[in-house]
Image 1 (cartoon, helix red, strand yellow):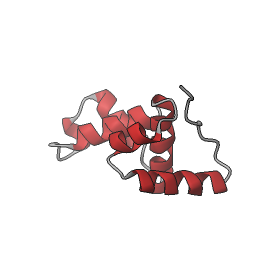
Image 2 (tube, helix red, strand yellow):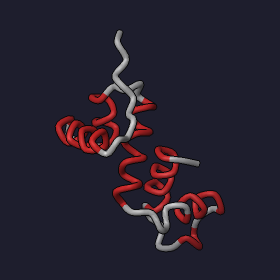
Image 3 (cartoon, helix red, strand yellow):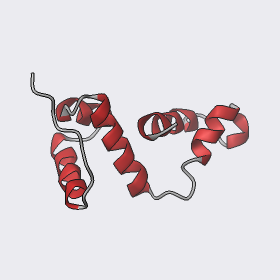
Length: 92
């Protein structure tokens, strides 16, 4: 499990649950995979996976992520400055 699916699973899983012992084995494992990683690392992977999922469409990605298009553009600029390869928007 990676990026988008891992973070989504963790987010959905934690709602209404007090501890990992209340979760299914798969749900608990998804959350355990986040341990030891920084929020910045998880955020970057989530943004990149969302962009891939949306074929590079920044407007749709921002909407799915619940952030403004400006924030997404700033994050993309930051990641590119660090050498991260991001999907380009698909021409229609």
